Length: 271
Image 1 (cartoon, rainbow, N blue to C red):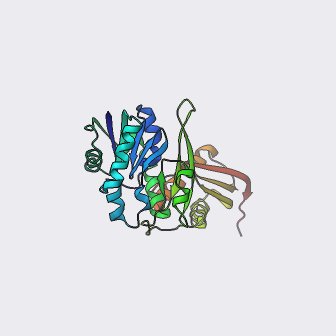
Image 2 (cartoon, rainbow, N blue to C red):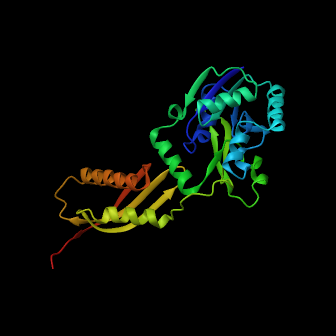
Image 3 (cartoon, helix red, strand yellow):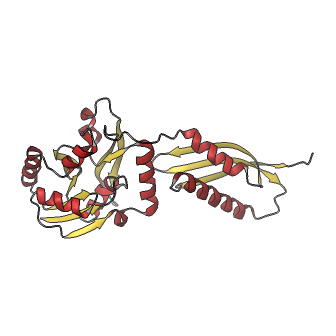
């Protein structure tokens, strides 16, 4: 069996990228947070995200429970798994999981920085810290019944570069994820409005729309002052850079897109 490791700190987006990365390197199975996933479907195990606290979650993830461990080992044989990606927070953790499941030695170690950009990692950390959300690389229908009265929502369908579907993700908030900061949308809007309003070329900020989905993007409609005795594209580009810098300073990650719409220009009269 070919065994690979993917590790990185909690909340950096390993599970989000796992399906695409496994497909890219030709791996059929994943071990992630106590689950055995084969070709994008959960086939055995119990997720550590069902646990009540972080201590039991870690124990679940490294297969300390005999019944849990034997179930996954049996499934590995049943599905005749030939290649597997073991996911954990460190090399030590993935080695422990491989040893517990009696897998062959890990032949190559990958890290979250190999599969995600610094920008993607920063955004994933922000989501974990402010929303307490975790991603499971399995379909919604396979976890919905297990999260009664807990946040669970569909993630996204995952496709290969050839547009073949290779799996789905589900977003959950585990019971042990009790500490997170909930930032309301108007906070983002107010910061973006303030950042634009203090620019000397801006007469009025007409509207700010902020979307925080798969892409974090802002759409801002402005009125500008006359005269426009400068290169408009250059000044708007500078404004985008200023918005990006202030947003990153306050929230710790960058916007994926900043759209500026100029509605009109206004003569600023002296009183």
